[in-house]
Length: 208
Image (tube, rainbow, N blue to C red; front, top):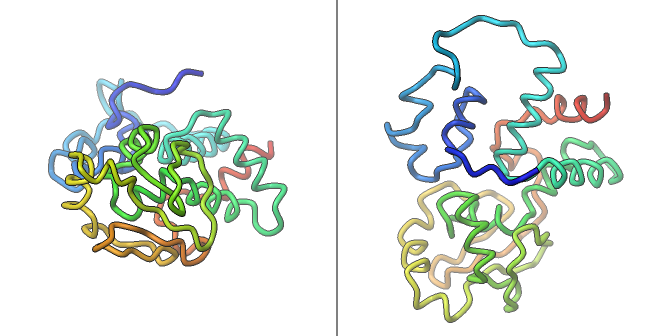
């Protein structure tokens, strides 16, 4: 399956809520969810009762699209979470939150996960002083995420410097705004994740 390259706002409208795929635009009146409540493709609103499987599918798609992942990637994360001790849904969210592109987005080094993924691929960030260009790189407790020295002279760093600190910082990450570096103080917990996903439905979908 190819990566989705269509309008990001269309995915939010399909989900019926904001997935914050367009960064700062999602917080303004220009947000498509605010301007166009109608589901894409429908000439007029229709009331249709979704099946149990349909509700589960929609929740899984919402989670997958929120983190900008392909189906195979997402299902692999779920299988890993199911093998871990504890609650599968909580494990899944923890694994997704620990992705490097997500951490970059959470601390404000990028305005959206898609932008964070692109900047990670371009090699702008370091983990413990070493350049990492893999968006799925899994951070661990004690890791320090910073900027490559050469990137500090580019426009991406200037843009990030202006927007960092504008969004609430997750409790499991500590930010040194002066040094533009973030430290993973602890592993994320379910209460730290504000992504609107019902992991119970996702678990039920993959358990069918």
